[in-house]
Image 1 (cartoon, rainbow, N blue to C red):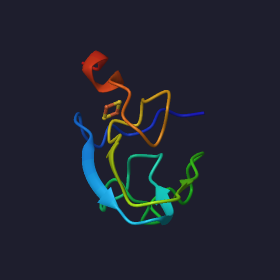
Image 2 (image 1 turned 30 degrees about the vertical axis):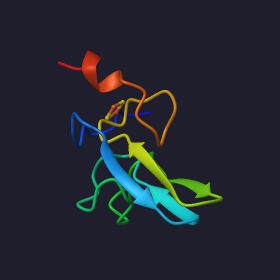
Image 3 (image 1 turned 90 degrees about the vertical axis):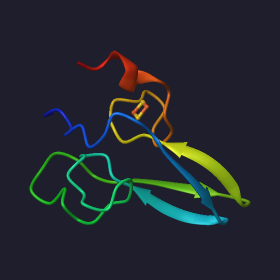
Amino acid sequence: MSDPVVAGKNPIEATLEAGEYWWCSCGRSRNQPWCDGSHAGTDFTPLRFRLEAKETVWLCTCKHSANPPYCDGAHELLD
Ligand code: FES
């Protein structure tokens, strides 16, 4: 599997309503942190996640989190 594109080196804070979301895992989306279909032709697929209630979350943009779609601090270890 190829490496994802590092779309950013800081997470995006988002207050989201309950519902289903598609997080970009390839890093190519121009609408970070959401999938825009740019993974087409790559090994990547978007990650679907669901929130049961309104919540403020920190979404990974570096695509190296071990707990996607959430930031786990991995961006601090990137060059
Ligand atoms: S932005 Fe990816 S781990 Fe923080």
